[in-house]
Length: 114
Image 1 (tube, rainbow, N blue to C red):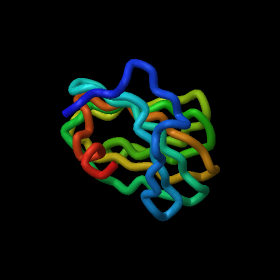
Image 2 (cartoon, rainbow, N blue to C red):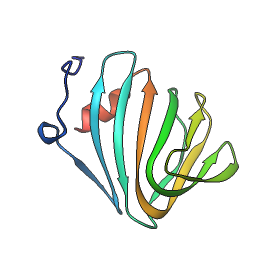
Image 3 (cartoon, one colour):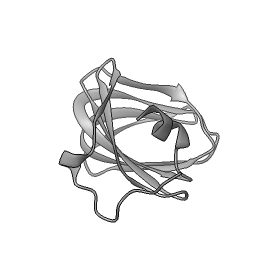
Image 4 (cartoon, one colour):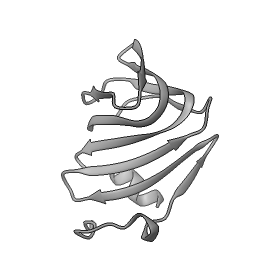
């Protein structure tokens, strides 16, 4: 696996359409860390799932109902949440917005899709 360049310019990085109102852009990574920008249309969902990665997500804009381990909170721009490895989580977008996801280690499954 390669790592990203030291400087990543958004206009040079493809944006993946994941369908159903969700798109993502991988902003930077190495084996230990990855940052991903995810756009959500109003009503779009990040379906409940789990993975081996630790995750911290920052709400850049919009409003989301976020589920971490069965606890649901409404988050808005400036808020963030932490997801431990293997904990089920998901989000429903209440007002169109952007999440910045940080993963450790890298989400290799994302790299295979891009």
